[in-house]
Amino acid sequence: MRNDTSGNNRLGRFVETAVGGERVKAYVPSPLPPTPPIEIPGLLTRLSAAERALGRLDGVSILLPNKELFLYMYVRKEAVLSSQIEGTQSTLSDLLRFETEAISGDPVDDIREVSNYVDAMMFGLERMRQLPLSLRLIREMHQRLLDSGRGGTKSPGEFRTSQNWIGGTRPGNAIFVPPPPNEVMTCLGDWERFIHEDTPSIPPLIKAGLIHVQFETIHPFLDGNGRLGRLLITLFLCATGVLRQPLLYLSLYFKSRRADYYRLLQEVREYGTWEAWLEFFLDGVAETADQAFETANRIARLFDSDRERIVRESERTGSVLQIHEVMRTSPYLTAASAAKRSGLTVPTVNAALDQLQKLGIVEEATGRRRGRVFVYRAYMEILSDGAGN
Image (cartoon, rainbow, N blue to C red; front, side):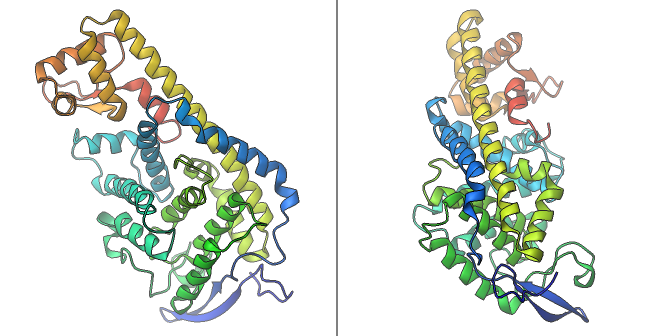
């Protein structure tokens, strides 16, 4: 890295700070927007493709009879992927089975972290009805994100008052050292102002890309920065009206291109190459939105096809359709939980589950006679694409 001597503010500045007995240079980013300004014309083709893909995705409620259902499951997939980037081993199946209390004895810390991510995400989306996207909202979400498990000792809900670093075993051999604690609040104040500034020359999608990098560079918490930074992209697009439903989550794109993602973030800091990052980011928005749109289509087709089979071939159409409906939001299900959610008796539920098994729509996952767990396998295969089984 180098200090900027060119008179622009694309590059930040270094400040020397003492950490653990050694002196290191911490990086303080310049406030947004970058100067010279982002070269928008070179990004227009990618920007148009991303906007078109987002428009199609935002209209997905026309395809789905229950868009809340798609959101419910898609949020959980994003939680798994975002946490996997941070090193957890949990899969979507682990989370869903954990939520239905169908299993025990799994790596609970991992699953709890993913479950906390779901909670933080849904809390943030709901809270934005009363509170703008702000430092206060981010602290409240962070509190939930690190509520329990391994993050509980990392000051949940509090901006850091000690030095952190990225990569390496200590600040002295780190890949990147974020701003020292005494600079964090100034950086965050500038960042929050930029979020709310009227910037007609910067399209919202490009602004989202700038905001994400700046948050990752400030790294204002001791833990959870990556997960929260990825979530902020979607929150900002919802806050600005680009998305009506929070259906865009970039974690699978970032996970599958992790080396490029981290390299481009670092090159923004080292060389001010915002445009290269934004090309990558806009490609990710377009690709992710197209994948989510196709996922919604596949789910809608599966549900329609399975309902038709139940009506055509089932001996107990009414109760079987009811249990099929329950399994749309609980692809892992026990007879007891199905009875509770559907209002049917346990014997009726067991008979319906047996019918669904005969039709090949659900499978029994445990091989046990008691405490059986049923899985809507084809649905899980669509949902788990890229997120582990």
